[in-house]
Length: 459
Image (cartoon, rainbow, N blue to C red; front, side, top):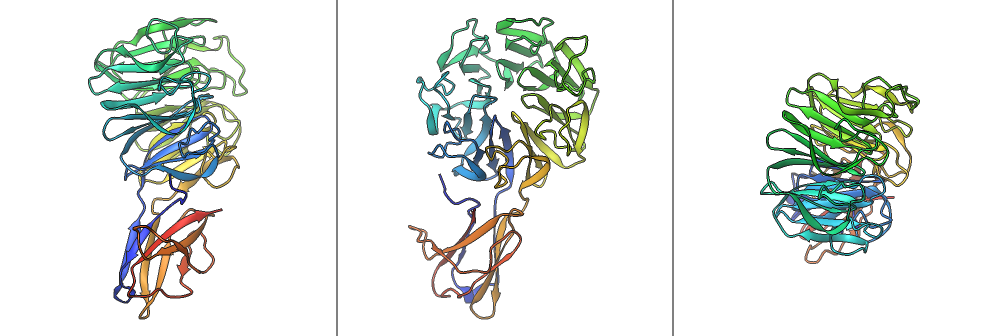
C-alpha cells in the first residue's frame, strides 16, 4: 500500500541537458461503486480505493476511511467488484486469473476464505482461471474460464442457487458451463448463458427475479430461466433488476418505490400505484440505443450509443446527479456525450469519460467520491482528470521548472530523491502548491546527481 497518492516520478539525470521531460499518470479504465466505498483501476493495472474502511474493505492494511484515492495494488489487476449495501467487502482479479478479497467477513462469510474473520489486506481466494466477478450484499459470484459459475457467502434467500438455503464460506460450483455474465444484487443473483438466456435466483419479494411471482417470503434457490434469448447485459440493484437486449432495448423488473425502473408509473415521492411495489415481469423501458446499464441500491443508470448518461430513481443524496434531490420515475439525461463506463453504489454514482477521466456524484459521508471532502454533491464532479502529469523544462543553465496538472482544489507537495534503491525522499521548497499551478524550485538541484521527483497529494 502506498501512502503517497497521485505518485508520479520523473528522472532527470543531468539538469543542464534537460530540454523537456514528461511522465503521465495512467487513465482510469474500470470503476465499481459499493455501499460507502469506491474502487477503480488505472490502465497500468493498479487498483485504487476510497471511502469507508471500517471493515478493511479498502485493503490498505488499516481500518481508516480515506476521502482521496489511495493505491492498494500496484499492477496486474484486471477486474473489480465492490459489495452492495451492508456487505462492506471488495473483490478483484489479477491477470493470472486469481481472485482476491478483503473486508467484512464476520456476520456472514462473504470473503470465501473458509473463516468468519475480517481482513484489511487483499487475500487470495482462488488461485487461477477466474474471468469475471460480482459482489452482492453478503454473497459473491464468479466465472471460470470454462464458463462455470461459482458462488459463496450468505444464502438465506437462495441467492447462491445451489438448491439450499445454507450459507457457505468456500466457493461452490453452481452451473458447470456456458455462463457468460453475472450480476449480484442485495439478496438476488442474475446470470446470462451463451445462448443469450437470462437466469435468476434468490429473494423475490418485489418481483426482482422477473418470473411473474412476487410475495412476502418468495424465494428461488435454483437458477430459473427468465428470458430465453437475446439478452446481452445485466445489472442487479437492491431489489430491482435491469437488462439489455441485442436490439439495444432496456428492460426492468422488481421494486419501483422510488421510480428506479423508469416506467413512469410511480409518483416521484416514493408512493406506489395500483401495481403494488413494482413489476414481477420484465418491462421494456427504452426501445433502442442503450449500450450499458448499472444499478445502485434504489437508482438506475444507463448509457446510450451516443455516449450520453441517463438516470432514474431515488435521489435523496444527489445520486442522480441532476442538481436536485427529487426522485424521478422517467429516464433523465445527465451528461450528453463521451461517457463510456458507469457504476451505481448505495447512494452514489461513478462514471468514466472517453478521455479516461473519473467523475462522481451523490452521498460522500465516508469519502466515497474521493474528492478530498465529506460533502455530498448533486452534480457530476471531476475526481481524476484526463491528464495528470508532471513536466519539466530548463530555466537557464541549471534551474528547472516542474509543472503539474492535478485535481481542482487539491494541494500537492514535491519531494526529491537521488536514488530509488532505496529512495531517500526529501521535501523540496517550492512556491505554494495547488491545482494547475507550477512548482518552482527555490534551490536548483545538482546537475551531476540523479534527481527523481514525486508529487503527492496532501491534506
